[in-house]
Image 1 (cartoon, rainbow, N blue to C red):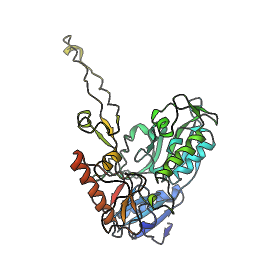
Image 2: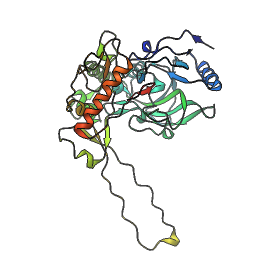
Image 3: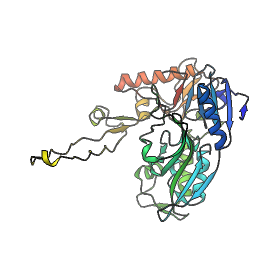
Image 4: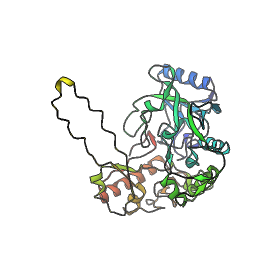
Length: 378
């Protein structure tokens, strides 16, 4: 078993918090990863699987359990049954942005707008990562995972993962356990073979973010370069020299609210409709049919509203920090809580609670954290 000397989790998470775990295992191959997890699960120890540490908020106390670091890498080309598409099977520990760069270099489209997102490929489906109108649900075919309950490895289709807005059945939401406890071993994506020629961009959200006119043609490499530049301006690309990037990315989720609640917010608050669930198929037994068919259910779609706008318009601006605290909002992006150097998890949590309180007081809405919180509460 590849045990290593435990390192402080503050060195392995982008928020720079967390103590030293009791035990640490580095898994460089799938076999090592499976063996490590089976051993830890069999012993009944507390456990934590760690990829890039970019969506994790650890408490200040040492972690009394085993941390398994997923360091597997590799990309395998696979045939697709769809003409003009290719499938990539990627190991869970592979760096996400390295995969995007690889796909763009190969002339494959479908994930280029998610350039610069930190973390590993295995973590991507857990919260259905997305940016500028692209989400991994749009290209994900299946994941290979090790199930905690059955201790078995299986291929699970994307349709069975409950992928939604920054969520899946695998995600550990704040205050609740995941619906399915399992660890992803590999991810299979299906990407369009578009080459390096310029082509029109269909997504309005991506066009707006990059300043493109409708019908304007650009290459996948152009999109990647400009997305990276946009993210850098917001402090959302990891850079050891920039304290604004010592964060977990967007700390609060954009809120999904009812259409009626959205109407109570100022008109200036950015919002986007969320497609409603389709009505279930109505089946009326023939012997019970009396000629009447009930009208279709009508419902206004829910609305996603900008958490960043709510924060800034509750009086908490970019760069805000509480007195004597080493935690602050990013000076570039109102959604990112940053560690300005030596901040404790307690300081970051105090700032998060203050922001939640301000938004609730001004707009009647409680923002929910996006990262996984372990050993810390808001």
